[in-house]
Image (cartoon, rainbow, N blue to C red):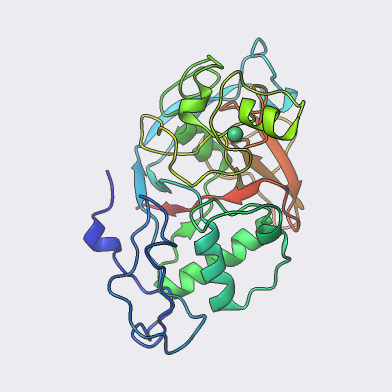
Length: 304
Ligand SMILES: [Ca+2]
């Protein structure tokens, strides 16, 4: 399932001058699992340029599933229906979301202009998911990644692909089942740690996951397809324009998009998500040019 480590080691995100462009992700900066850090450090001839590992990608098998939620589902939004069967072709999805360290390497290397929100909301390690980034920031990251790797297949998942992968064959509220007390094994959610620490009275799960804000990516159990953090930790931008219903949506897994649409879809909930938010079918939206408090993204790649 996983790309062989040898294949992902040290693809240069710094273009053809691999040896001279050598910002390194040190061991301390490199998140646990899911990323391959650079080997023995080399002198940084061009400070700010990037040499980082690529994310571990998981091959998502072709198949079909029922997208959306039944009207009986607790917390359901009207936009989660009508349910319909969708056919998905195989593709790749990153094992974990894009991290702060990776986004920082991108900003330094590309000079991409973005606000400070992604690094100033609360303390985060380099191995936490980057949050408060916009859909346009994600597109800039993808453009940079395509250029640096010479691989034009990098993209965001479509909303249908995302839900298919998040469910990993399950049909309930969450990939671990419908239970709320189990949530803290599988996701960083609004939990009792946050309730007690911040006196936060928003709806929370009846368990402790140990994290008030974001957690290092890959800290919680994966779904059965090996994907971590599909629910909780950080919202994930997908490619689609937000439409308030699935009526008329394609059934082949393509993103529903037009160049002029300004509101894009976010999926998965975040560290702020209570039981109604942390569901495989839940949807949110935001203006493409502005990050939400917990909005991040996860890389996908097209397969032939
Ligand atoms: Ca939490």
